[in-house]
Amino acid sequence: MLKTRHIGSRRVNTCGFCRHSDPDFEERNPPMDRMVCSNQHTATGHVTENGYVRHRMLEIEVRLGVIEFALMPNVA
Image (cartoon, rainbow, N blue to C red; front, side, top):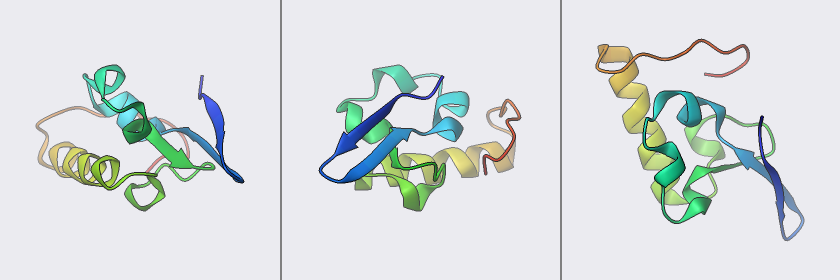
């Protein structure tokens, strides 16, 4: 289940793509690296630059077949 929080006036959730692709997702520190704005489960939706970069790296690893992505509807 996605965790929803508020930062100022922005609503944020945990990134579904990263959560399903990154085996170390729960250990990401700071936890803000896990968060995306609203329901944007994309790299550009990440709240932090580090979260953005990690998301992009996961996308590359999934495309190369280094890691497997558990298919989820509406998640790029």
